[in-house]
Length: 460
Image: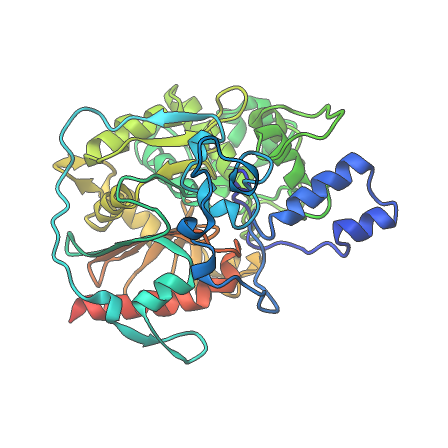
């Protein structure tokens, strides 16, 4: 699919398309092919706000029923999705529901207990009308279709009031969550900080001395948690000399070019990144911070990220299905991009947050941790991150905080993944999608309109 990508939404465009670069002699052949692969992602890793609306396929033309991927035995020709095309569109629509069939993963066990209840109180929210970001009328059902949604679950006061699936997605289907993964890692770290097991004011090297010569050598843990640490990590998908390619090759997200001699796992790659700028000066969204934070969490606990997810979150929530996370060649989980889970289990997680950290008779996070996250971070520092499409937002513990009248906050991932929590409206929304455009800048103005419309509707 892109083979799991998450990354900054504040990118700098490279002046050359890979084809132009090759004609100019800028890249060796192997690197040119790699650049083409990344360019084929479109904005698969996460792109900036679009200055001009791209041409999108009609949603009804790219449904999995229409495309017929992997539907014959064996799949042949254009029906086949594998590592050679899973990052392309529309093959990505199949890949986000079938990651473990394409990439190595580690299971996140739900345990043997009966699933916790998700009581239903269906309401006709699909017919709710609102004005979109262009001032044109739209309904929730039309928004669902227009944004290539695979699953949408709306909860109000602990009850499922709307639930819809499309594109072969089922209530039991796992979906790749991309950067929603970061928000789980962030809450793990925040809980450990609350318990005194991690010191946010300590240097990263207190927990990961291997990073002493890297950008994190003189960085505080808090700067990692809130992405205010200064690290040179460029994400220019037509230039294979930028660091996003090193991350992708080391983690297995993209095939390594012939003769590749670089790191072959995420942790070795992190050691190569250098400081650029002043730590704490401003927010800059970088996936590698989440990988470092996950490393700190595992060092502080002595446990694998997937084990912590199972023991401390998934089993306590009373989830219906196991989850899983993509891992690299040495079993390192992609703690900023690789989580896969069902919409209903994510709704349980969101409801737990709305309730202040407890659910299913279990305390999963301390209320102080949830409150600290929901209050947000420094809004002035956030403005430096180049995300004007998120007006008024801040970033705290790897969660996006809206600072609106309802106190809403959310986890978000490229191609349209969300866990949106609105405490004042007593609402949780889970949206899992496979939009052709990865970057939130293209769809987020409409998303904000939809959140407001849903909040108003559930209050009636």
